[in-house]
Image 1 (cartoon, helix red, strand yellow):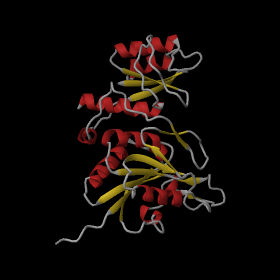
Image 2 (tube, one colour):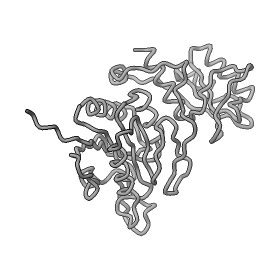
Image 3 (tube, rainbow, N blue to C red):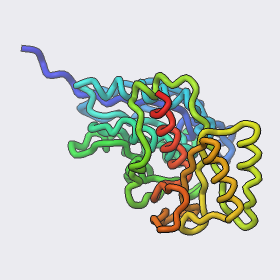
Length: 301
């Protein structure tokens, strides 16, 4: 009779502040992200009762997150989640684009097993770095029998991967979350295989409504380097200046897809009878951009 396999937790590292180093540990705001290897991050935080495997998927500052890194991360995550003896996966990531990666992974994979993204606001060599505690919490979270899906574990809190947003630039707990940011029903979701096979990702641009928004940027891009999609962060309930709305209607007639969100931090967009463009509910602008990217990938596959 075969012995029962030891349960495994896999750590996929992408860099970020959690792997960053400051030139002067007493001035931790002056640091370079993505310097410490995942094996070194795991020293002293490995859980008992589980075998921990690790992979260095990338070593970047998350402000530089790319579609290529997303594809690599998705590929390795899908591989490990398919292994019967893998309990869950922890991903180390920078905070700046974490909400986009979390939304992307949750929407494409909807994993039954737990996937915890974790991070830090202070580099690894800061005297009071928050990285080790966050990593320990993430490792503990994926051990829980009831844990599932993509989450963000940071500063003692757990956020749903499709509802989290970075709302503070430097406090230890930079994340908040509101009602679950369900993927808009009007938008398609590609398969993992379709995302991994995508060689030329669609282009989706962001534009902000504000006083005097005249639509000039939209018209200029549509005339010379037209994107396939636009996400517009409207005022209040996703409202748009009449000139910006006119420019986006012209873009729509040229074949671009347009999706509205609110530029407000809370509340999202509610449907109204006078709506001209579809909206993405409570998604943030960057989450909505991911949603529209995925829709375009599914349509072109």
